[in-house]
Amino acid sequence: MAAGKPAAYEVTGAAAVVRNGKNERYVYRGDSFGADTIDATNAAHLVGIGLIRGIEATEAEEPYKGVSVADLKAEIAKRNEGRADDAKIVPAEPGNRPEVVAALVADDEKLAAA
Image 1: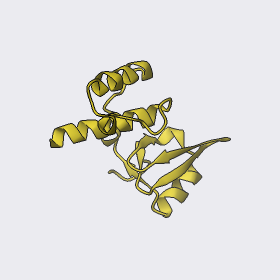
Image 2: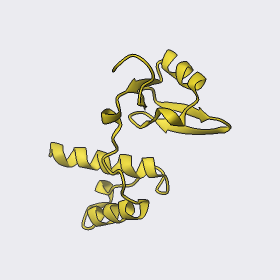
Image 3: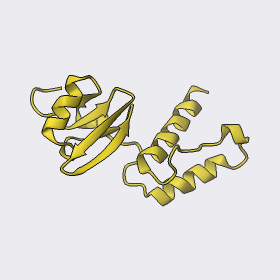
């Protein structure tokens, strides 16, 4: 990564509280977010304690970018057809886009490894 402000950040710890103004959210290991969605002081703190790392924009591309949450949920329902209960895709928070995407990505990786 070039010197200066990164294009995005990736969570390397278990979770990080990302603050932007008066808003805050939890972002979990492996998830990424744009550098414009975090306060500079919060970013410096989280990088300093090893919870996040700066990444290039190409590393931060979401595999399901531009796909609506409704379509992501429909994809999960389609993939779950005919699967045993213990093999079904179940996002940790079904209404939370990053969790839905994470569940699909995990399933993609599982299918690729099979």
